[in-house]
Image (cartoon, rainbow, N blue to C red):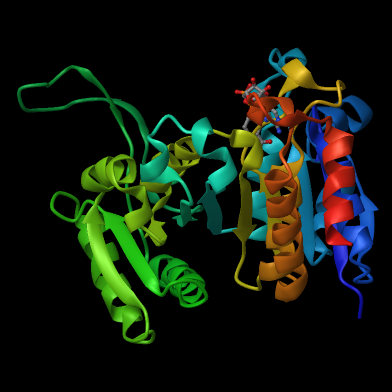
Length: 358
Ligand code: NAD
């Protein structure tokens, strides 16, 4: 049976980069069935909502969603619920996407793009697994209240609630152990168990889940130390699993180690391995429509889609090898260009990946 892919290009550079990823997927001849729908600002302009019911319905009934990016300054005046970015949150919620997988890979050819010394970071290949639907971001109660007693009595106070249920920790731990099992079998769980009850609970559950994966070596690190070690010796990590708040910060830190946001894919998965695949960057309205955006993050997101949702690991390997080979040939979009390499457009980069596939 062919797999159904919902293609949601979105705004800004979204349509340009998605077009290249779809060309690459089509060239693999896997019998995928693509259906396109508007999302974000484009959907608001066409149908009055950033995530119209027809788009949501398509996503729900697809095996995977290939997502470009959403957002444009021209929609900044809209009330929050109608802003393009709400489409991402709506899709995460509707599809139950609880596991965010963000690889941070620095191809040796791009080592100079990092702000770290090439010898520290060249060849970096880590995977951050971030829990996406729990933690202090969604805990209730939250708000602003007036303190009723103690030294701060009478003052206004902002507050949030951090919590994780056992099932939430277990399911993200399983995703992380399984990902680690397919890589170098090293998993580091990041928490703040020396201070936070939620983190100690997280750690206890992760240790319990680890008994099902004796082949994976589990370690633990406090988040402040992890933030330091990511800069000091990033290659010591392989797979990192952490909660929503710490993962938000660490995954951006890891992404910036590579220095090339246009290269980084991401995946968000639910319990039935249905997933939303998108580049880690935004819609880059400053360069939209100019055929200069780097399509590789989106093409690599398509490879993740094949690996994690469609059970097509060999095809994913082929795409990743093709990307590696165009970089080795010295082809660069403007964001990763340096002297001595050849600057190409978005579509020329797509052409080169197609050629490398052959
Ligand atoms: P951005 O990632 O869109 O752009 C940051 C910088 O990186 C810009 O200079 C841009 O030109 C460059 N850049 C990004 N992707 C690139 C690529 N593929 N090739 C070459 N250069 C690239 O972040 P921003 O400017 O903060 O946000 C722009 C819009 O994107 C906002 O509306 C924001 O809300 C939205 N956004 C959307 C998502 C998403 O769709 N998931 C994520 C982040 C930001």
